[in-house]
Length: 501
Image: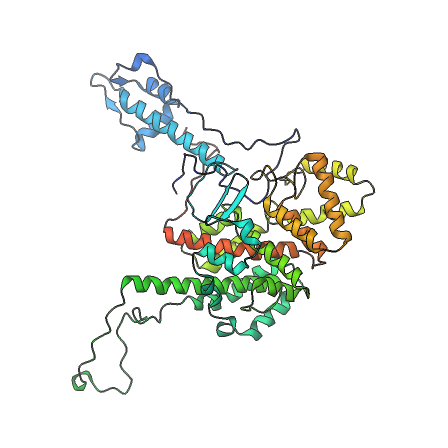
C-alpha cells in the first residue's frame, strides 16, 4: 500500500466519526505537522574516505557492530577484504546511502503512524470530501442533498449510477425465501440491531451472492464455452457438424454486464442490511419507509426525519469502519463480507457505539437536579476514562470546528417538526449547558439520539439509522477498492526485543 507523504485537499484522512481521547489538561491539538527530517550522522572526515572500518561504518549508521554484520548477511551492505589483514572494510558511499535509506524508512514509518490517528491521507478516493467544515458526496453538498434525497438516491450518487438503477434492482421476492428469513429473524428479533444484523447477514450471504452471479452470461458459460451433448445424442461420427459458437461479446459489453451485476448485489445488500437492522423482511420500499413501518410511525413528517438522518449518515470518508471495509474488499472478499466487517468495526464504543454514550448522558441529564453541575461532573469523569474520545459524548468534532453541519440540520429539522416535547426540551437544554461549559457543539451522534428520544423510537434506533445509512457508503468504498485492484497491506514497526542486535 502506497503511503502519501504529501498533503492532499485535506489532512485528516483517517477520520472516525467522533473525536479521539483528550488529555485532562484541555483540548487536543489536531493540526497536521510535517514530519521532522531525520538526517543521518555525517562525519566530514569520512567524506574523502573510500573505505570505513566496521566501527566507523556502525557509527555512521547509528547501530552496533553486530547489527552491521547482520546488514551484511542480509545483503544490505557489502564488506570488502583488506588485503593485508583479516579485517573487513566498507565502502563509505554505500554506508551513507544505507544510512539515508534507513532515515527515510524511519520517517515514513512516523508518517504512517500519524495517519492512524487523524494524520495525512493514506489512500486516494473520489467518494467523500470533508474540508472547511463542509461534507460533500461526489462533489455535491451532503447537507443540501439530505434535504430532499432518499438514501437510495444518495447511494446512486455514491455508486455513480442513475437512481432508477438502484430502484430497478431485483426485488427480495426473487432471491429470498421469505419464510426462512422470517424464521431466522424471529430468533433474533429481541436482540440489539447490531447483533441481529451480524447474525442475519451471513445467513443471507448465499442469496445476496446469487444476485451478482454472472456465470450464466452467454459469453462466459461455466464449462468454458462447450455445451455438453444430450444424453441420447448420436455418436460424434453420425452427428451433423455443430453450429458455430456465438461470437464473444465485446469487452465493453462484458464490463457493463459485470457492473450491472455488482449494482444488483449492492442494491440487494442495502435492502437486506436495512431489513436486519429494522427487524423486518427485505423490501424494495425506500429504506426510510421501512424503518417508519417497523417503528409504527404514521406521520409522514416523522418518516421525512428518518430519511434525512439516513442520508446524513451515508458516508464520512475514511473512518475506522470504512477503512476496515476497504481492507476486506481489497482481498477480493465478497461484498457482503466487507459490509459485515464494517458493522463489526462500527460496534466499538469509540466509533458507532458513541450513540450509546450519548443516550446514557441524556438519561443522567434528565434525572439531574442541577444540570450545570451534572455536565461539569461528566466532563471531569470522561476526561479520566481511557475509552473517552471527547470531553463529553456527542459534543465537539475535530473535523468541524464550527459545529457538525449534519447535527445542525437534523436538530433544526427536529425542532421545526416537533410539538412541545419533554425529551426534545431536555436534549436542547443539555446542548446549551454543554456549549456553556465547553464551547463545543453537538455532533451527528447527539442529533440521532435526540431524534430517537423525541419520536419515542425503540432503544438503539439511533445506531440502527447510523448503520443503515453508512452501508451505502461502505458499498461505494468497497466498489472503489475493487476497481483499484490493489491489496491494502500496511507494515508494522516492530518495537519488541531485537534479537538481531
